[in-house]
Figure 1 (cartoon, rainbow, N blue to C red):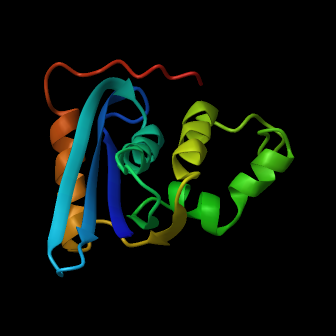
Figure 2 (figure 1 turned 90 degrees about the horizontal axis):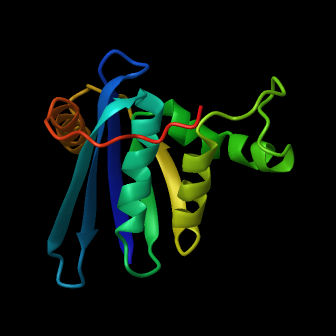
Length: 158
């Protein structure tokens, strides 16, 4: 099963302001019919990078069987971590970055790696706010969630 996962995160007053994520899953079935699922949530105090990660995590965790997934994101933080093999280095160096400092958002990176396990995942970067319909929808979901009420508490460890 081939799935395209579009994702975006937002934070107001980054860091430590309210934020949200948006994720849109696209799957075309054997009859050629497009199926779309959307996810979003807002947090009272978070960072943009954490919301970028949450968007991908929630999308992958929603999949109920192994899939070939293309993650489409405007976040270099997320896409470069895999396409530039940063994650491989972090794992090899006990979650230390190239400056020998602890990798930020380790708990979310671990959760993302676990969510990826059953799937074949590739990451594709696209320019944000450039009129890409699904990216614009994810941005709308993320910012609406960030501006909403009853915001969740983000257990930021860093």
